[in-house]
Image (cartoon, rainbow, N blue to C red; front, side, top):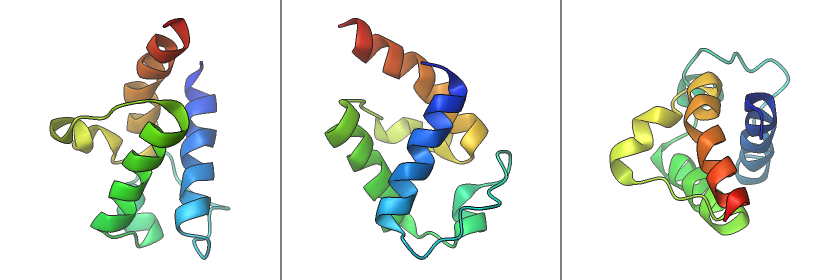
Length: 86
């Protein structure tokens, strides 16, 4: 799975958990929490949706890897590949 696909997945999850968020101009290199006024519970919802929908686990110590769309894509792409291969 490519990084662009991962970004689209993250945006779809955000759309589900924060339906009022304006996703039309999300910058890929700016912290998602800052751009979309998300709180820690929203962030945890993203992690839970990744686990529930895609069987992708994100350990607590790796949460910082999910700050921006770019960092999400770089961190999650190999995890999606591993899940797909199993």
